[in-house]
Amino acid sequence: MRNRRRTDPGRRKRSCLARNILPALLAACLAGCGARESDAEALRVCLESSPRDLDPRVGSDESSRRVHSLLHAGLVRQGPDGTPVPDLAEGWEEVSPTRWHFRLRPGLRFADGSPLTSEDVRATLTSVADADSRSFRHADFLEIAAVEVRSAVDVDVVLSRPFAPLLANLTLGILPASRLVGGEAGTIGAGPFRLVESRPEEELVLEANPHFHGSPPTVHRIRLRIIPSETTRALELAKGTLDLAINDLPPDLVDRFRADPAFQVLSARGASTSYLGLNLDDPLLADPAVRRALAMAIDRPALIRHLLGGWAIPASGLLPPGHWAYASTETPPLDPGAAARILDAAGHPAAAPGQPRFHLVYRTSTSDLANQQAQVIQEAWRAIGVETEIRSSDWPTFYDDVVNGRFQVHALTWTEVIDPDLYRLRFSSHYLPPAGLNRGHYRNAEVDELLEAGVRETTREERIRIYAEVQRRIAADVAWIPLYHRDHLAVARARVHGLTLTPTADFRALAAVELEP
Image 1: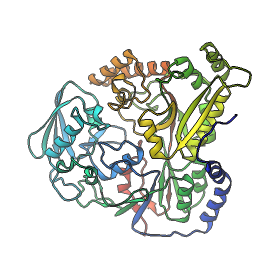
Image 2: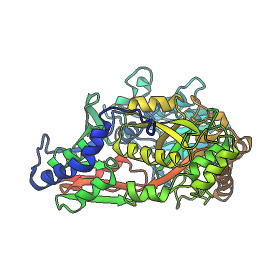
Image 3: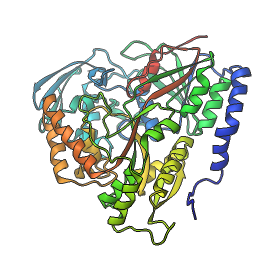
């Protein structure tokens, strides 16, 4: 059997629609569809899926991260260049290598009007740092030994040892201490917006938070519409029932909006990393020679050119070029012939001409672009004698499989690359799930030591040296297959003004958007 693709039976029809019928429908809508305003004051933005959890300690998916940035605020936030800047804290001081003092802005309140004090900071941080915490952010706060309240606006974070990524991690949203127990902890925050309505799998409605400590949002209401289908998102934009899509349309559809004066297209270099995750506990993928051969069969520039319209650059690791800790590393070169010979030498010859060497299962979401990418990689691996079954699932099912290690190969994008300590949580053998995010179960004792050294060092020069070696060793082991750093692409109706794309495509930027009546 040439194609072992197992997915939704309607997938081929929908792909055909996207390629052949959708352009005509878009053209018709762009030419004649008037806006159907259900709420003229609302900015209507799409999400691919419902957020898994509004609690910033729990929701680790992209939709949750986007909503967290609107509902919540941390002691600090990431500035345009990645440097931490004040948010709830008006300032801080490194009293010693293991003690940091933070002073809160005066008069802070949560969205429900209740006061936000140092006690809420203490309760939130310790709830993540505690040994029995099940938060996916737990590993970010392991070094917090204590959080000491000095006054309503003064709080000290005491570390068990020097920990360089502390400030970068304190972007975590602060929650009311009274709500930390129970299922509604994430519904009240101190961000620029407050939640006023939630219809699972349909829509979240947010309104400007009247108690927000920063500049008041210039848009009063945001409707976050859950639209899993890329095709439907494009059509909703075209007919005027959506105002904005950020990184939620494939590049070929983005180009169709570019020529229409009713729309604007914004682009910016992104800090995200798309990759293939590999289960190194799998008997086949445990062999680095097999992993190297698989990487050598993928033409990443062609993938970027044909599927992404050139809106990306090849990735060699988690950190994009321009990041202060980025180091150029060698990735396995494109060479299908050499890849086939490596598999022969690794004990995986074809049983007979035309017969596969072995089979892999590739898990992905039902996104059209994700499935097109899967098909391209499926053909590349078939060319070296590896047959691949593509299993597409709705986003919640797919993500649950990845989180729980039910995969051989999966495709995902890491969207928030700030501090290089992300390598520790992603690749240290001490952070296998659920303690961390090393879902591929990569193990390398030398890398573990380097990653621990990287958080103890406080000078940027020494951290650059350490993480350069980390990147080199992980690349040499082919612990995963980095694919590309995708550019941010936003399509907005002409009535949307003031949108800025940050390096992480942070939805907090929506607070500065203005809408024409």
